[in-house]
Image (cartoon, rainbow, N blue to C red; front, side, top):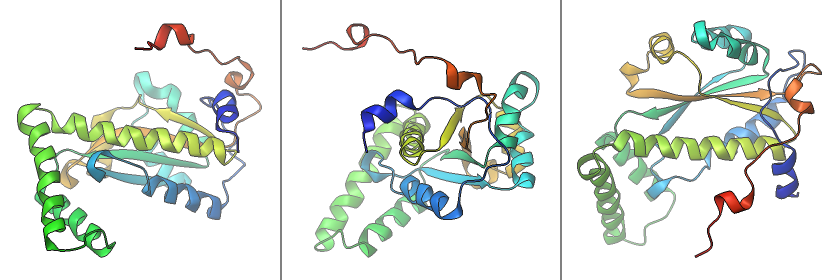
Length: 217
C-alpha cells in the first residue's frame, strides 16, 4: 500500500455508477475504520446515519434541493451515503459513557487513574465551552477528522468518495429528528464506484505548491 500514490490518484467523485454496489463485507470494514477514528481526548462526539438503499438515500436527498440540487444525484446514485453528525453539546451522559467504555476496555490500572481521566476530559470540555466559548465547533472539528480518515480509507479500499457540505441543514434536521437527539449535521459522504461520465476523473489534480503552504522554522 502506497499512501502517497493513493493521495495522488484519489479525487472527489462527481458522478457514480448506480449499478455497482460496495460488497457488504468491505463496507463493514469501512465502518470499523470510521469507528476507530481519532479525536481530541478520545471525545468521539459523533453519530452516523447510513443510507444503503434507495428509500434511505431519498430521505437524505430531501435536503439536496434548490442551490444544493446538483448534489442529489451523487447521493441517489452512490452505493452508500453516510451523514456525519456531531453532538451539539458534550453532555454528562456522553462523558459517563466514554469513561465506562474506557474502563471496560481495560485502560485504568486503578480507581485513581480512572478519576484522572474523568477530570482531564471534563476539564477540556469546560475549557472549550466556557473559556473558548465554542464547544460545538471544537466537537465538530473532531468529526471532520473522522471524515478525512474515511476519504483516505476509501482510496485504500479502491473506492470512490465525495465529501458534501452543500445541503439544507434545516431539512435534514427535521427529516431525521436531529434536534431531539442533540445532534447537528456536519457533512455527507457518498461512497461507491465512479461513472464513466465523471468528468472529474479525467482532470489533473490541482494543489498549491509546497512553497505556498509550508514554512520551515
